[in-house]
Length: 242
Image (cartoon, rainbow, N blue to C red; front, side, top):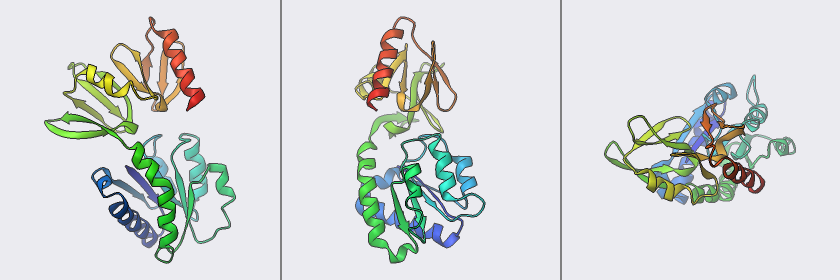
C-alpha cells in the first residue's frame, strides 16, 4: 500500500505520518511489508509527484498556502476518480465542499486529541484497501517478491523475451512464464489481453481508439485485429460494470 500526506506545517505532517504508521502496525501488521508513505510540504509538490493509480490513500490538509487541499483534490479527481481522499482540518466548515471531490473522510487537528476519530476513519477506509491489495508472486533478480495487482498497468514480453510488469513508476522483469501470468491476471475483471502477449489493466485505460488503447500515462497499446470485436466488447462491459 502506498500513501501520500500533504501538509505545509511540519509538525502536523509528522503527526499524520506517525499516526498512520502506528495504525497500520497495529491493525494490519502484515501490510507493513508493502507500506510506503510519501510526504509533501505543500499541494504543488504533491501534484508534481502524483499520477493516476500511484496512491491507495491520500491525506490532504485543507488550509495550505498558495494551493489548498480542496483545490489539489479537485485537480486529482480530474485524473483519478477512485483514490480515497481524506482531509486534515481544524474546522468542520468545509465538509459540504468535500462532496464535490467525494471525500472519504475528515480528520480534525491536532490528531493527538482526536485519535479515536482517526482510527474510526481508517477502520472505515483501509480494510477494503487491504483486501484489494493482493499481489502475485514473482521472482525478480533472484528474489521472491509480491507484485501488487492494483499497480500493474500492463504486462508484456520484452525484447529479452522476459515477462515484464509495467507499474506506474517502474518496470519489473521476471522469470515468470507468460502462460502463468495469463492464469493469474485474466481471471480478474479488470484485466484483458488486448494483443498477443500483452495484458492490460483496464483501470488504467484513458480511452479506447480504433486500433489502440491509450493508457493514462500516454502509452499506446495495440488492439488485436483478429480479436478486436471481442476486446472492445470486454472493455465496454468493464465500463458499464466498474
